[in-house]
Image (cartoon, rainbow, N blue to C red; front, side, top):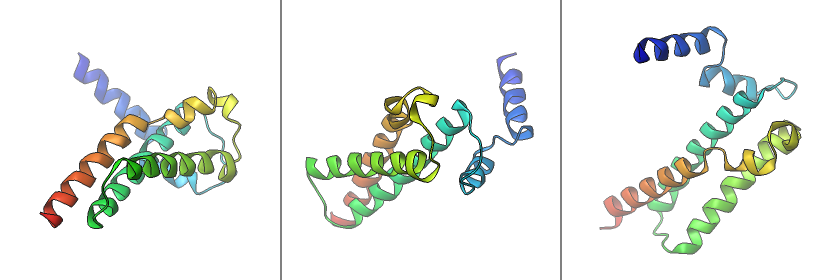
Length: 126
């Protein structure tokens, strides 16, 4: 029963146009309206992309140390804030506050960043 429900939810999301691809297409339109779940999904996946790209770039160049983790956190947060606040002109309070939006996908992104950084650095520089 649990797997059947999961399939129905996935089908419903695709039928409603809430797939990740459709949400990123919607992101290209500044005048689009957003609900709490949609903006959360977009910011989550945006952070994952940022984490993967930064992890690969940090690993390609021999960057080491805690300071580069801080740079990633600042860069990732600045991009997410810029997207929802400056680009889309959304008020964070309408979506649960700026802190909620800035935390969206943060820990998964940090994990992906550290994994990518460590793997690429280890494969290239050792």
